[in-house]
Length: 424
Ligand SMILES: *Cc1c(COP(=O)(O)O)cnc(C)c1O
Image: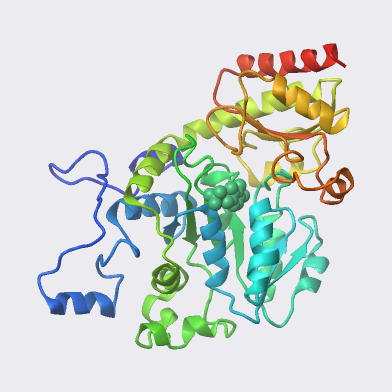
């Protein structure tokens, strides 16, 4: 089936007289006929529901839908995108291990990788998203257990050469993890380019309506965990009566281990009602993405034509350095555009404050057009010099183009440009 159809039908197929819509199963727990039956589930928790910290029917329906959209064999939802990124690494790395990540990633993920995981003894080795194969290969250490990157980076909007990173990862017998948040499975299917694990912040386009924070980890089922590099997968798990994940669960070892060890212990499972709301967003994801891409490209072309604009970062523009990679990996380039206004921070702030339709908010990939000024918000503590060092131009605006009529969006941008010109 095609994505539009999967968005509506995957994950839940009602039988005779069952509800048309996946119900919210609002229950922490499940009833068993006997103590023995409960004992059985503790022997193998994948056989039945135990407790809503591990799994819940409403969340499971969403997990199955997302796994189907990505072409994976299983998925696990988390209470945020941050939690998905965290668990995707903790499922592979312990204190004393390292992993490689490109530096073009979401700011929150940089904090997690560079500071918080470091305190726990896990080292992140950063490489450029544009690194050559030799440069990536040179970054590996004996203890490197994974490679991480973003398909379409937030907010750099660079496009990752997924096949190049997958090749480097696989030649060192480790998996490639891709954060596919900005692209969504509708615009890119990282598994078909060699990625092994995909993570998302479902908070963004998947939800789309700005209703709830969430994340998901998806397993391709393709990585060979028995290659000698992952004893936690092949050896006995002391915390689970000596189970060996590869022996018992075969191709699903990664995603089942994530649930049985990490979800059990960290407890970052979403609520059933959150999954219900996420599902409403997913139902229209494929058709929403088409319009986000169409509006995004028109808005980027408009911005490129403006005298007040110094540069536009949007890989759908022929002038963009990632245009070729975007053509190769993406069905469309989404609705997020970063651009730099001439006149630095002062003009960027005046421009943004003059916008009427586009709201100022700490969010992105919303159905409503919104803007964020990184230098005043996420990177506020930095001086102009520090901002430049961090690759953030003080005049940079991140525009997330929504689903309003594109003429209204462009009119709003145009009147804000006129307003800063008039007061210049
Ligand atoms: C927002 C975001 C995250 C973090 O997700 P939350 O749902 O906010 O926790 C991770 N990766 C990317 C690319 C993001 O845009």
